[in-house]
Image 1: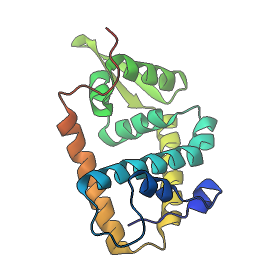
Image 2: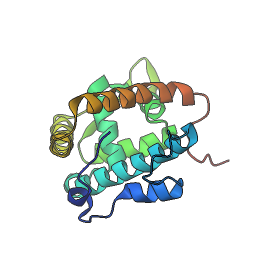
Image 3: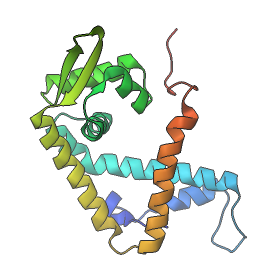
Length: 189
C-alpha cells in the first residue's frame, strides 16, 4: 500500500493513519484481517487525507490562475473528452446543472473555457477549453503528477500498480452505481 511521506506533505510527523486506526479500534497487533466495514472506514479516511493534501499542495498554484480544485477537474474532464454540453459536464461531475454553470461561468470569465450555443438547439450550450485553458490545465496537471511521482518513487511498483488499478476501477464503477441516486448535492426545494 502507499506510504506517502507525510512529513513532506504536511510539514509534521503526525501520521493520519493513527487517527484512522484509533477511530476504527485497530492496533498494530496482529488481530487478523480487518472486516469490510473497517476497511471502508479506513479507505474513506485515507482518501480524505490524500485529497486535502493534494488541495493544500496545489492551492497556491491554482490560485495564481484563479482556479479551484473542482474547476481544475472540470478543465481536465473537458480537455480529455473534448467539447461537452453543460448537461454532460454536470452529469460527469455529479453536480446540478446550475452548479456546473457557475463553475463554467468563472472559467469563461478568466478566458480558460469558451461557450458555444448549438445552432440546431438553442437550449443546448457546449463548452471547450481555450488555448490559455489548455496551457493552464496542462501546467497544473503536470505539477500534480510530478509531485505524486516524487512521493511514490520509492514505492513497491507491483503494490502501487494494484492500488492504481483498484482506484481506476472504482472511479469507473462509482458514477454508474450512483446514477439515479442524485448528485449527492443538497437539493433546494
